[in-house]
Image (cartoon, rainbow, N blue to C red; front, side, top):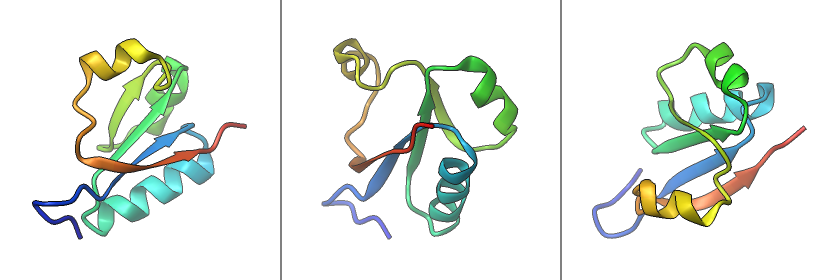
Length: 79
């Protein structure tokens, strides 16, 4: 579980079946998850309440638009 002092969240790049499964599991464990994919269609197909971002999470401009302070881990699961 997350503490106030240390971020424990996970960014998952790739909204594919494995990434979606891991994201749902972590979310159920009360761990903050951001699932991201450049494809709007893929994120729309997820039909879930997970926090998501459509775009390239590796783009430097994203860091200016999103608060990523609660995430300390990154999992790349592209297919």
